[in-house]
Image (cartoon, rainbow, N blue to C red; front, side, top):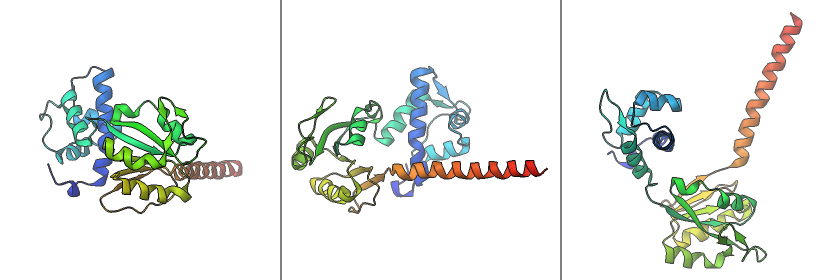
Amino acid sequence: MKSRDSIPKATIERLPLYYRCLDKLAKFENEDVVSSKELGGRLDIPSTQVRKDLSYYGEFGRRGVGYNVHDLKKSVGKILGVDKCWSAVLMGAGNLGRALVNYGGFNKIGMNITHVLDLDLDKIGNKIGDITVQSTQELEKIVENEDVKLGIITVPSEAAQTVANELVEAGIKAIWNFAPTRLYVPDDVVVRNEDLAVGIVSLIYHLSWNEEENQEQLSEDQQD
């Protein structure tokens, strides 16, 4: 296996796609063996890229035979760290926070939201599913006692950096940030940003261009 720093970011981003596809093959299609061509074809990724991505982490499969689905799923899951479940603390019990807590798919990919914290006295003590919202003052104790490494931020942008600082000070090493703002954290803390507004604007951009092209084509047809 190559050193982590030498592995391209694009390769790391594709690993969850491979894992999800292998999981589907194993659970719902009863496939025992899959080739790089078939795996890549399902994901619109060239088979040469599939083989190259996996080669960063070792030797898998047999030439001319393919990959054992269950063995490769287990190996990729271990590489991703989803072979065990990581506890997470969620900061912000608003609508987005509630939606994330109520989503049932996180356990399948190695994450379990175990605590929800908020500053709002009207929210503290309320339940989201099976979780009782606690005060943010409990953060340090929770992280220390339960060895939590992952924090999720769903607070407004103006509060996000303060919350990030609190998470870092408590010992959190990875942050999933849904606030539309850049966070400044130490080098040993990993941040993944999910800016929903940027995603929507990107979709609107493509819709706008498609509409403009259609109008231009209609104008040309009318002139003909």
